[in-house]
Image (cartoon, rainbow, N blue to C red):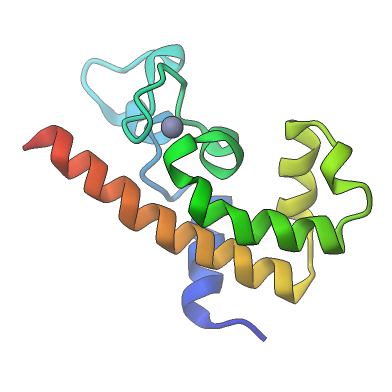
Length: 122
Ligand SMILES: [Zn+2]
């Protein structure tokens, strides 16, 4: 069984109780249009939504590697799925090893993302 900390990290992501730009842009004044809620971690001009964060944001690659390695072992044909299907399969999994890796990814990526945000605002 994975820890409360990991479960909390996963639950926050599932409930959109996170700091990704796709969500924080809803609360800016004036409202930031959804297509302008850019990722401040990679600065690639990508919208920072859940799928970008989980599967695509390049600076988070090292945190993502153990998660994807685990996913490729527990989800059939994972490596040939589209990014959208990979996202769905990871998020709907009830495999405890995968959920542990998912929680660890969120915690590590959040620390990195928050550091990036504070660098931008200071
Ligand atoms: Zn990014």
